[in-house]
Length: 237
Length: 225
Image (tube, rainbow over all chains, first blue to last red; front, side):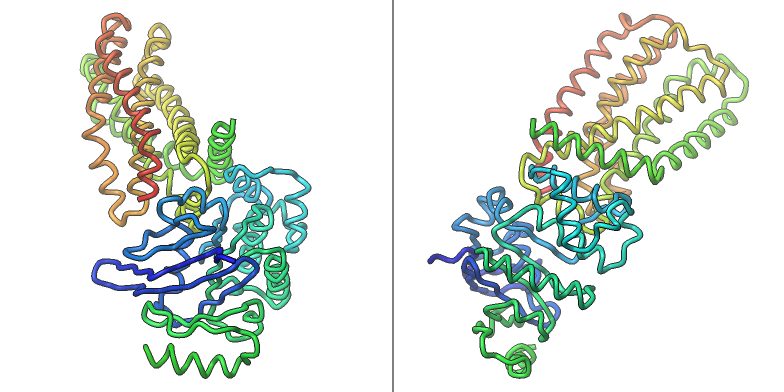
């Protein structure tokens, strides 16, 4: 089976600064890859290149065989990206935000579908409130609710568990496992070695723009992973 | 259908946020009042001077308030990285431009209507006889300002020096619109009618047509960087 997300020899420079230096990764449908690494290791840059937000300086990234630079429009229909920003308008309500983004994505905007997505992230009672009054965790949940409605085939998540309380983390982990089981591909960056990593089938450690370790998650305990991280990532830094 | 639906939702979002916050409208109304006080103070009661300067003053008010409105039209997209999500939304990006342009036009027309009323009150003018002709000039001039202004606002939204660069880039290209509007307004206010300013109106219409086409064709490249 050919990989759903394929990254080969990816390089990215911002002026004199090299952020990515020959990153190669593959993620198949139904698989989740966790990117670990210190701040500035290049995790977010990899996600942004695959999401079509950045053009690589060298190398290639594809999604379902589609080039992330030349066929960006088609790639955008296949993957959804959730970055550090919530992508929410503070002076619209939760429901209005979902309606706006669904319409802009040309997705069907059924009231009961929006209601269902809000209920799934436990925000149905706050649907009429302006996002400005939401906590950081509520905003995170609402931006994840958007993914339920868009139904992408791949998810690119930049620290998706940040700002979430325990219940929301559990909900997200369950949702990601269900998404994988349905054949979806996930690439997520994280700083956590905890239970959030149970979602991942593979773990890649990045250091100074290079993949220093790409290994299966199964059978890898958190302390063993931390030892490997210290060995590879911190040694490089 | 999809294009219109997507353009309409962008307009709906901007209008709803403005209706709730009134950020732009409050600032523009206050700015207009200050501007009129300054004009009134500078010109005094001399009607002859006023008649000669009125077209320029009117458009100075429209352009300055328009620049304020246009310059901040993409700032809402910077909050929470919404700009990023707009870029990632699949489909024709010019629908976003159309929605933003409609929002800017609605805001500018509202402020211009208010400015016109205030001008008549502050300077004791009677515009009833020339109002239909004046509205033609105002609509053509505002479309010219808003089409290019919306494009340049998108272009400079992510720049650190956007407050400086936005007018510096925009105003030189708006020279045909500024000339056409002031000259056509002069003809209308002096009672000569639109026929006397037909060549200025032709220039305005041509500039509007070019700016609309440029706006729709280049917006995607502007936001893709």
